[in-house]
Length: 223
Image 1: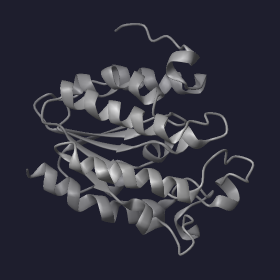
Image 2 (image 1 turned 90 degrees about the vertical axis):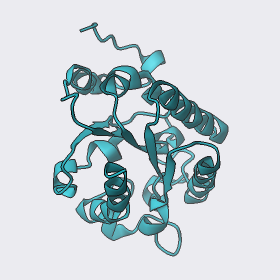
Image 3 (image 1 turned 45 degrees about the vertical axis):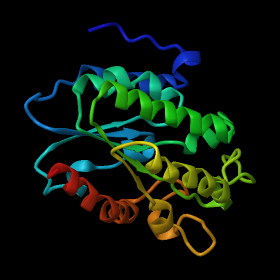
C-alpha cells in the first residue's frame, strides 16, 4: 500500500484524521457484492449504519471524516471510495466549509461538490449519487454570531441546498434528499430534540434522517 502522507495544504484535515484515513485506504471488500459508500464529514462518520440499516442485506461502508471540507474530500475519494467500485454513494458534506476556520464562499462550495460529482460519475460508470442536503444548525450555538459559527446561517444553507436540488436537472442518477426540512423548526434551526450540540445529530436525529433515506436506499438496492 502506498504510504499516506499528511500535507495540510492538500488535504485540509487535521492530523488526528490520518489514522482513520489509513484504515479507509487499507479496507478490503468482497468484490462480488454490491456496496454503498456513505461519504462525508463527522455527521456521516457518526452514523451507525449497522444500527440504523439492520435489514439491508448489503455491505454498507462508512467513509465519513470529521472536519473534512468539500475540497478535502476530493483528495480521499480515489483510495477511500473509487477503488471499491460502489454502485451507490450517499454524500453529505458542506457545513465545515462555512466554519470560521475554512470560510469558503458559496460558489467555491458549489463548484467543489459539482466537480466531485462529475469525477465520481466519470470514473464510476452508472453510479448512483444520493446527496443529503446540508443540515440546519442551531444558530445560537453554531451560527455566524456564535463562537464556532463562522459564516454559517440557515438561510445560507437553504440557498446552497436549492442549488444542489437543481443538480437533479443536470446529473443522471442523482437524487437530492431534503433532510433540512425534516430536521428544522419553524425558525429554520436544527430541532433541539435531534441534536446534542446544535450541529451534530443525536440518536433521534439519525432515526429521523434514516426514515427519510431508507426508502431511497432500498429502491436503489433493488434497481
